[in-house]
Image 1: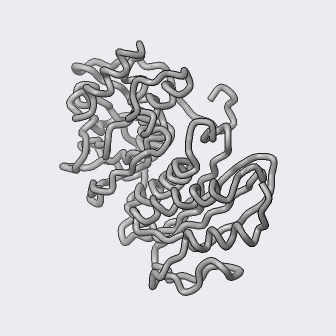
Image 2: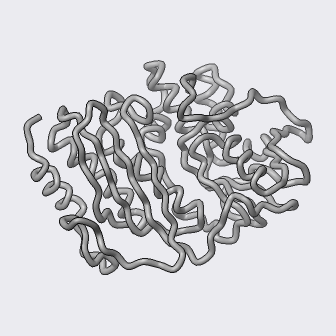
Image 3: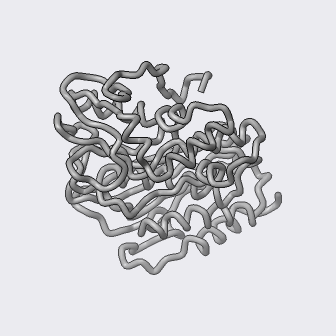
Length: 307
């Protein structure tokens, strides 16, 4: 596609235009100038075509949503509010201005929902399409992975597994659930759950068992995930029926699937879905009727070719 960098920047400046009083200088200068906070949260995520998303599967708007959600969820998991996003992209030159505009609008859509402003970024030409977002937020009371205590309950802000179901459907060329496919292409952040009283928290980006194991290790406790509690979740029957239709164990999706970006939190009397208990010991276990269930080990590494 033929367009200049100036045209792209002008388009992005229009899409991301804002009169937010927190932004003193936005897109158009060497750097943004914004109002800060005493305890700031900083996080960065990069997404690469063919690894984290496929343009054959997702619209540019959905890709923008997906990448923005991944960053905003990290801020929320620290009990923070997302304030600003910085977006850097490498473009192959095959993307049209309309495509770039829709990508930006997808990012803007999620930023608006979270109360955040896109204040700048960078562009470069490359053989690979990639988008990196840096999110900046603030909190008065940071919640870390390391605060879980024996006696706490374990909660999810929403049921995990929908993104994994959508990925399986797309990868196999099936079409039984638009809901699952949509949840994979553009995960939904549940901004209604107040986890500010949590003792520990994490964003489920890799898998419930992965993030749960990290939290248990950081806190020096044992997480016990209860399948019977998960079965009581409002969306469980719908997801389970889909799994049966595809011949899949639904708990493979729920426990080992990633990229739902639900919040996993510990505490007492929190909102959301009760999924287990924090007990003495170490590691993470899956329980059913008081008996530990053997599960295949799950891990995630960006440099593992089997992922």
